[in-house]
Length: 84
Image (cartoon, rainbow, N blue to C red; front, side, top):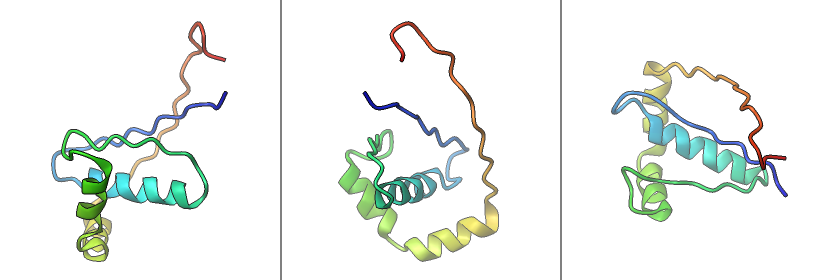
């Protein structure tokens, strides 16, 4: 059985959460990770999400780097019954 790690991207409306989620998702896939991705609430499916995120990708990332600070936190979840 594989371990599950959940990555949550949190921020205000129009803060760049979706672009950052796209970058994280794509980097993980390139490096061979199995990634389950939930594009809701803003997108109907992952393909629509990908098409939207690829549009003006470089320009959007450039703007994000100028106005966004990313804080990475690691939290450990307590083992629950049934977790191994």
